[in-house]
Length: 183
Image (tube, rainbow, N blue to C red; front, top):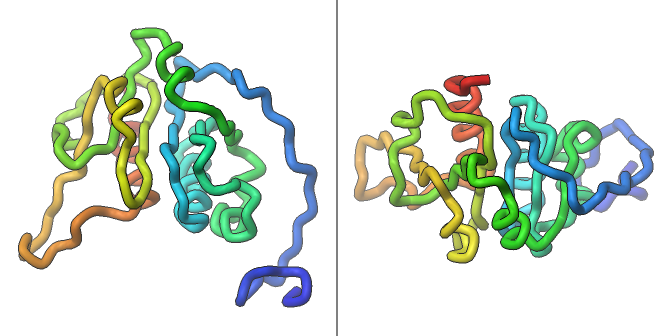
């Protein structure tokens, strides 16, 4: 395995499958949540987000053109097989998000939004997650209909972390929205 893997500690399991061709204009499902990723760079984060989407029954992840390749070996490993069940669509996100029907909620993870706890019965929509280093681009942030913040619960705010990892934030938001969803 070490000869065919780029990873330092590869799994003892090997999978071979065809890279699927996915239409770029796959519409958002109005009856389920979708995830939209704005320039996620870390392969481990993308793999974990794919696995999180699969766990919560989210079928589609829209990725900006600058998001890490979903077939990067570290993404494949971190997704733990979920890559075969979740569609990833790479596209220019701004025109796509602009074309969505106005009744489709856009939930954005931001540092200065409403507490995630206040979103009582969310309707299915798009969960927008920004890059690890820069957050959401201003061109996407303007489309958010519900700005969400995960409240920090730290004993010492002076020494607390600045933010959460993108995949951790995505998992918490997916859980909170799905558990309280109208569907």
